[in-house]
Length: 117
Image (tube, rainbow, N blue to C red):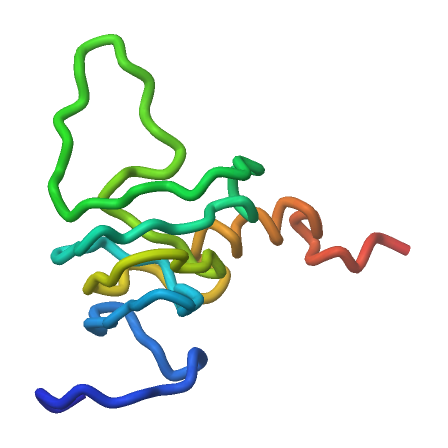
């Protein structure tokens, strides 16, 4: 913040923040990487995939007829653990607008899980 690297609590992270990630960190928000050094992330909470996923800052061109990836290689997602390497990215979504937040909304239902009486 203000051109300095500082630690902030997750609720204080906002869209556009630059976040530095390292091994052992939990991703605080959905982010698009602009720097990646051998970074791997566990996306088990999102995809159920037990293997760590290699991430990159490079944008991969989608080939014609190829389905869109659930978790793009240049993005990391809130709640996922960094298992290797380091990276830097800009926050794109926070709170309930993140991928994990949208999953929580689907589980709770549109009425927030309160149900109708």
